[in-house]
Structures are given as structure tokens and as C-alpha cells.
Length: 287
Image (cartoon, rainbow, N blue to C red; front, side):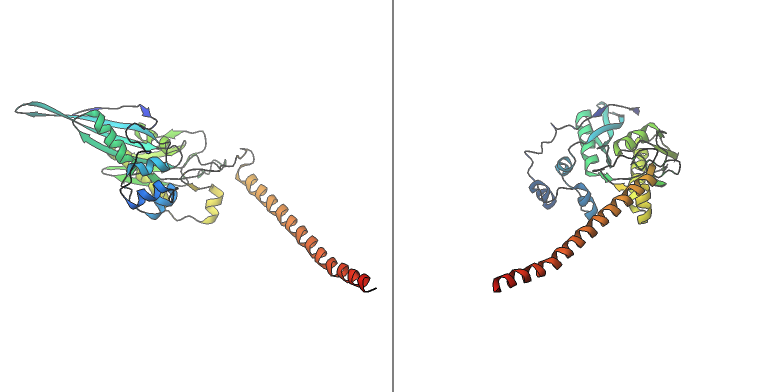
């Protein structure tokens, strides 16, 4: 068996499947096509299995794909040597969503397409935050807490790292974490990590396990934990950190409360003045 690694990345292969000419075959596909279901986060929260790859292409149009491993196997037969390929691929939008898949066949092109299609069907949501005690930037640059994942003989543990450390892990794990939108992390591995499928699967399982850890609301605010894509990310100065952000929010609250009190007092004064003015007008008419 000969194995080769390909570091090329694609920005989605739109020619393989056109969303415009897509005719949905499932109920979920029809809801996505009509616009009733327009959020991948809500879809994954429901736990409904995704059977059509166009669903993911519609809800996550900016997916990137990465070839993790290409296996080439030769088998000697009476008619000669026969060659088959197995490809492991990963997809992600770089903002909280990642998935892996594999394909097998006689030709490389169709096998790659099959692997990417299965990776899209296996898309997972990832929680991110600022979980390192050495950092206080408040951005979603690392895992929010220590998580572990396992596939086959490979087990992976990911730990939050401060901003600027980078990805301290193997090449396969770097590709998966980059596609998931994580730029800093510590990692430890155990098992036969030369198996690209098991290594990548263990990393994805570890990232998916961030959704199954119970988190206190206080930790969610302090670590700025967010699931999936970051839609509105506030810019936080490194000097102020999270404490500065909390103080700013408290000041805004106080200002809004003061404004509401003023409005209420003004409305009360107006109501008190109205009956007096009405009495004066009536007295003038009677006079």
C-alpha cells in the first residue's frame, strides 16, 4: 500500500452539484429550498440526519475542502494488478463548522468527490471561546475548555491556548482545527496517528464533544463561548480584556435605565398637567 498526502485546499467545487437546479427529495430538503429552514445551527440542534448534500451547500455556501489522505492499494489477480483508491477529505467554513468523510473507488476524481460529499453530510458544530487562563482577549480563537475525542486506536485531547501560540499539534489536526476556525490550541495524542482517517476523526469527535459539556451561564459570559459561526463579534482591546467589556456593558445598562426613568417621569408630569389644562378650558367655556 502506498500512501500520499495532499496539502491542496479547494474553495468548494460548485460544478459537482448545482444548488439552483436542485430538486429536493426529502422533507428537510424541501424546507431548506423554500426558505423555511435557513439556519444550520437550528437544523443541527434538531438532530435530523442530513441526507442531501445540497442542504449543506445552501446553508453553508462558503465551505472549503481539504484532502487529508490518499491511499493507493494494489491487488494481484489472474488478469494482472488492480489498483483502488481511498481518500479522506475534510470540509469546513473556518467559522465553527467542520466535517470529515471518506470515499473508495477505482478512479481518484470520483473518489475525491464522494469523500467531500460524505464530509458535508457529516458536518458538525463547534463551540469556541477564550478558555485559557493565560489569555483574556475574549475572542473565539481556541476551545473553551479541555476536551477529548477517540476514533479507532487514536485518542486526542485538546486544551485551550492563549492567543498567539498557534496550533501545537500534528499536520492532520492542524488542517481540521483550521477548517473549524480555531487558531490556538494545545494537544496530546495517543495511538496509531499515521492513520489519517482515525486521527482526523478523533479531532472532529473532540471538537463535537464541546457541545455535550454542561457550562454555567457565568462561564459562558466570562469565556465568551459561542456555538457555530460568530455573527456579531465585538472588538475588545487587549488591555481592557473581559473585565473592560463587562464594565462597558454595566455602564450602558446604567445609562439606559436612567434614560427610561427620565422618560417615565416626563410622561407622569404630562399626565398630571393634562387634567388641570382640561379643567381650565372647561371653566373658560362655561364662563
